[in-house]
Length: 275
Image (cartoon, rainbow, N blue to C red; front, side, top):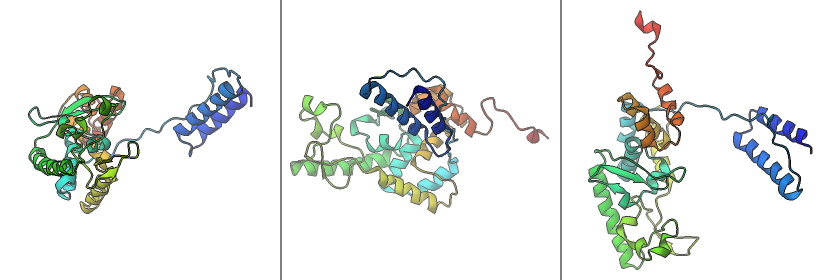
């Protein structure tokens, strides 16, 4: 296959409506690997290849009343977790992987470790879930102490910290805020540990709550994060502040929420509303 044939093939992929951006990128990488590493042929840079474009979708956002309605159909641990998604802007996996040491009740903040893009950030801890979270952590600590008495209680530590700090895995601060109900065998180490909660537990709970609340919007756990960002902007906070709370690398990613507010970036009012 010549360079022109490769270009034609990739351009054809880009024009197919049912082909994802990642599919075209994977095909390009595979072809380049074949020619460079297997056949030893250096292809010229394919400048004229038509690149598939990722479709721009506006995020689904709930109003404050809709968020309140969804939370009203949750309780216990699920209510606390959902409250952190819509009150702190956490991603789902950031929430389930949260460690006890990273919840700062005194400073009313949450430290997100190794978030998307392997970045750390600080976000707010809202007041409403503070007391329920404290009571919930008392139960989690009792379970952890029971695990320790049974000679378990060790949690997974990231970045080889287990080898550097041999007893840190049993310390309370390193435990997951939202642990699984049962211990399980870690496939990597072979140790019996208590992992974090399966994210599908909250996903199913939120889906049920949305249905019971009678909402027609296709809302999910990530919708609560979108709602957090939108409500911050509605409250008058600047785009850079919202960007920091969300952990976006590029402010252009955060700018999408200005389109959700109906009034756009410049606060444009429809001519019909002036009649």
